[in-house]
Image (cartoon, rainbow, N blue to C red):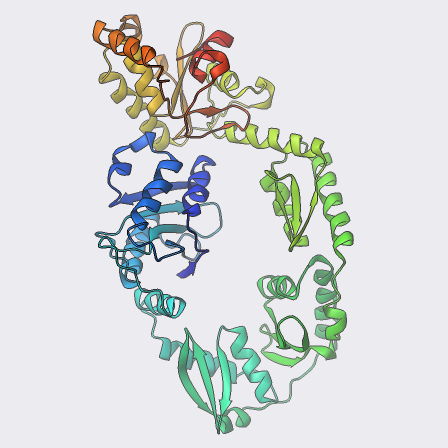
Length: 527
């Protein structure tokens, strides 16, 4: 397991990031604890309300400039499920001084990469207003992870050193390069090599032991030519030595360890882990040539060409797919800002391409509801303003858990409502849209990304829909109108982006109508 402490923040921006991932369907809120009234809001919870709670909670201690603590805990592949990751998160936070029994905390489970991981958000302030210790945070984090994973750092280091001594190398520097490629720092002191990991020295090795292991590397001309070809190819696709090193290690088990200043190394070692050989990189390619990366303009043109060619082959590609293609050029498409970033620089993308990708993203989002009939497809098109030809009916069975949960939630809401207006309010709060067709109603549960026909699932709302509001409810609404206080509806549907967002839904030009009311006049969406 790996722990990565992310950027600090004064405004708890991590909540925005994680809630956005939930709306995109690639994450879920596993747990919210010790957060008072925010927990009771359930489906009507908003990102803004959550951030405000954490900011106000942290204001108990006004000496902390950046109170957000945001960490990612990641396992290898799917070796831990979300419940196991949640348990690990509790233990990790306790070990870092954040008592999960009392500390306000949110845990999000993400499944948008090959490795399952959770994001944990909390405040650096204790409930009594004291600051939680942040000294040597990364070193303590490494220690806590080792303890959780039952890793004996001393034994692990001995094993790494034993394996490194088996390589063919002929200098102390080359041996240190092997250790560095395995995550260890080292330095010479007297006649010992001090080996560091996790912020401290974990082992001392006699220099003579290293010298006794010197072996002259056996060079293979064919292998040298192969490595040179790989370096030449991926050097053209990289924007930095870090990018290049990652490609070579991940794809070919070849480590590049640079020597000298970080921004201007004077040399490098090549560690061929496949054959256990270490030698100077200059014997394959001079460091000057290796670090002669393409100019920004050259890389810009390459990225534009990749985007245009891939969209020509498949006009329905999403921005996520495009990013997977241009990642090899060290580039990232920021659709919101309509730019492509390459390192610290960026360039604008044609408006036509941005429009196309936004449309594709919206279609992809809506397709995620997995319509299984014409009526469900039609309801989604009505709400999200896309053409029926953009969606396909899924023959395969939808994710049962989400669908069953959505149906159960709707039935529970219906059971507790006694008239039409009460039902509308409850559905609005739960972020559920009801669309009326010719002979049936279709429910769209935004939170669970599920869509289902009421009649096909044995849900009858005719009796509730037929009931008018009670006199008491009518009177309350009249009082509200007289006081000129607009009714606040959460769970607004953002039709332009194809996704839901929480917020106040108010439109002065349309007489304070909600989206439900506006759409009712446009094609049958019922408020």
